[in-house]
Amino acid sequence: MPTAEATRDGRRYEILDGRLLVTGPQPPAHHAAVIALMVQLKHTCPPDLLVTVGSRAFRPTPTTTLRPDLMVSHRNAPVTEPPVLAVEVISPTTRTTDVVLKRTLYETHQIPSYWLLDPTTQELTLLTLTPTGYTCQAVLQAEESFKTTHPFALTLTPENLCC
Image (cartoon, rainbow, N blue to C red):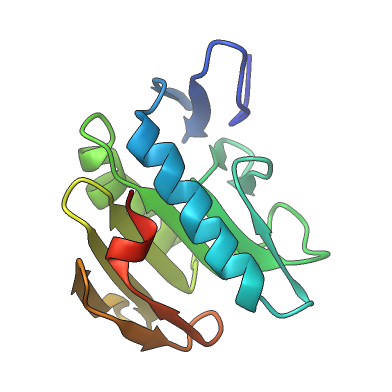
């Protein structure tokens, strides 16, 4: 059984507490947003961190394997160590999973930063982990810009990420 790996059928497979979660192929706007954000992250990413797109899974427990659309982790970290950033690009078929389920899982497994990018509405939500859970650092619309320091200094503008 696949564990959070891309397959030839274009679907993404993840295991959540022993249950299989299958995400179907995503629309072109989803892929374009993932690539645009990946390029921006790679240009500013410190050398001790690694930006990955779907090629690396986070396995916090033996029964849970998660694969965010984008992930930034320490370069030599084991897959059981939380990444410093998980990003989900929202599409109509993944909205509830990304906004509710994945947020809860990433918070539970102590991922310091979680971003949600919606290419349809050109909205970017930046969440930062605090002792009481995720706190909203910013919600950006279209041409609004925000300079974040988590996981590293970066200026973000949703319209530049959404084609």
